[in-house]
Image (cartoon, rainbow, N blue to C red; front, side):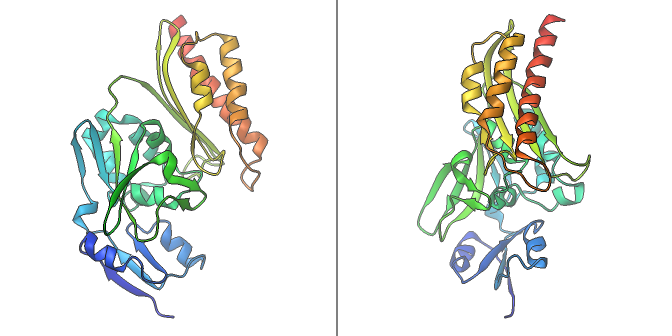
Length: 284
């Protein structure tokens, strides 16, 4: 069975070929080519979208930032507009792979890969981002939370492609937190990760958004923990309760990298560390 390669020049040309049997979209190739070499997948047609202009570029307007699906992680990190408005996205992407990987890999590809450990998904969940899905006759938006359905599974339907990621520009100031625990210091896949956007005034949690990775079939928002903390004074007892709630809110698995119990403990510990740091800042 021969493998065909097509460098696509437009979204229209891509949509004309996307339904071909066993066609796969290629851009950075940082996940796809690894799976092909391992024979986990054997596509018949590779559709190279790296030069499709409609899938590239970073646009700011109408209170949101639109990032084309083919924009690389390195380009996002280098964007002053994103660094100023969405700093947590830059923080998380800087911990994704190596410089070489970030200069090839794309934000769209990282999302479509739908790994439970996807670093990029954490800030996108916290910023209430949406993906723009394009088909021949329609375009629709889906929240990132609704887009990720399980390991390797997304809300993309037959005949659709991910055109862009749209992120509302926050109207309020947050302190930010992102930390992942792995088995090594570089190029690590998270055993567990936690991201947060937080605003504390006079010791009271006025706003908080929490998201965790590698502790469920998809990266998830910790809505129950957020609801518990909003309006609460940061005390030792509140932090202890939040820690237990976070540990019980996740549903990790045992695998070769860590046990489910360890992952629960890590998420609770990371949240407690975040809240205790803020409490100590207030008291100092």
